[in-house]
Length: 259
Image (tube, helix red, strand yellow):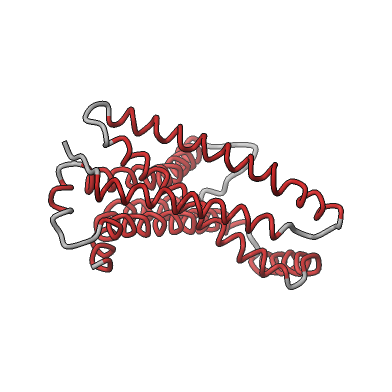
């Protein structure tokens, strides 16, 4: 059933993102042939570049808006009566929306990078470009050694965990806000600010109290990168994500308020 929920979510949200991606690529191609001069911008160049930037920014804003809208509209508005009559555990609803949101955020980052490369392609000598990339890689590898792969894996996992934690923070804030019969949106905003602030205080306390001296030791020992410290930070973020998920699931299971 989780697969069906994912299929439904992707189909519903693709109506927003696929047209956005298409328009972004079209304006990237248009800007590619504009032959920009850093000393002078024509009116058409200015308009075209401005529209591209607005579309690029709008793509990421849309990710946040769609994430909030899908969670609120499907599970906590009148549609919730229908969604929760399905023979599906509430955690599967959360997971389906979480995976879909994460997918679109990653795709948006890829499309943003692709659009930038398209615009810059007129001024790029690709053989030299790839040679420079290779040189950067060789330099990094000579410094990190085999730990470079560790670093890349760590950054990917850290990015995913941070995004999951951020998405679930928004979900739990919305769910807490709907425990009230009045001022749901205001309570959701207050819950988000409060939970985020508490999380930052706890993270800072853990870092300063438990990890700070280790970080200082690693620097004095000239370690190329504090891998253990980063894993610990990722672990803290994952723990917060798990807490947000559990609280959201409990509210949807036991304290759901669709009034």
